[in-house]
Image 1 (tube, rainbow, N blue to C red):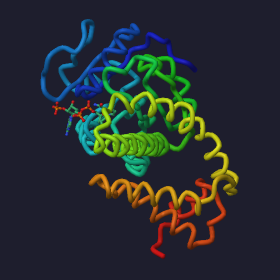
Image 2: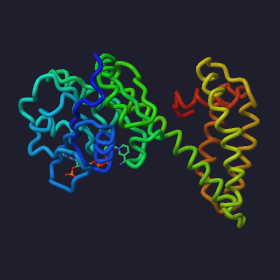
Image 3: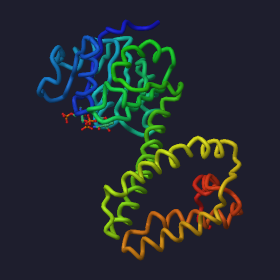
Length: 291
Ligand SMILES: NC(=O)c1ccc[n+]([C@@H]2O[C@H](COP(=O)([O-])OP(=O)(O)OC[C@H]3O[C@@H](n4cnc5c(N)ncnc54)[C@H](OP(=O)(O)O)[C@@H]3O)[C@@H](O)[C@H]2O)c1
């Protein structure tokens, strides 16, 4: 069964993210009820502020929770006492995969339907195409509420029945983002030590990311999937990374980032991956024992 796109929804938690999600539901025409532990400013016209948590949860079958952490989320739902039957909680509170699995088991004990989700977006991106939304949990529940969740915007993906996957994807993708950004900042530190303006470096960094770094992602991923790592060898990479470490030291710039990479490349070479390409580093990342 698929719910009416204008089916009512309740949002619990009105931090920046909960407020943005509320505004997105209202903009999409869903009758929206909110509950927040402290009375605050209205987040959008047309929102019904529930006087009590029970009123909020009674107003809609679909209850979206977006609070500080899983502990706060459980405290809130535990304080309900008797929950109205047939509620479905979509938890958009960030946490770990194991927290999501534990919360799902806890919800199952109480007969509450449960989907876990991760929204990779800032509050101002909620409801726009820029948001990435991942969901995990029973497919039938997801299908039932997908059209309502569409209001949150962006690209939606149901990752399967495992409620832990959205949190796992979120943190893995954030890791990709931070590693890329810190690499850029290291490059900027390096060139600015030689008085190159960041703006002069920018077009080259952008082209490099668009033409070389980004397009390499499918190939690297395919090699990891196949367990075979052709390409420019790690021995060759080691020579160039050593140069980056040396350039960082010479410029008085923090060399920890390239030194980390060099250590992993050398470790992979010691383990017999000298002739492998860059994707061969996955072998040491997966088994990081000291050697
Ligand atoms: N902001 C972002 O850019 C962003 C992006 C992606 C994901 N997220 C995730 O979205 C979730 C919400 O984030 P947020 O930015 O909206 O702000 P937040 O400060 O993490 O969440 C605050 C909300 O949780 C409530 N809360 C905290 N402890 C509570 C408790 N014990 N009982 C009841 N309510 C409690 C707060 O109520 P009070 O106001 O009364 O304290 C407030 O409504 C977090 O898990 C966050 O990691 C945030």
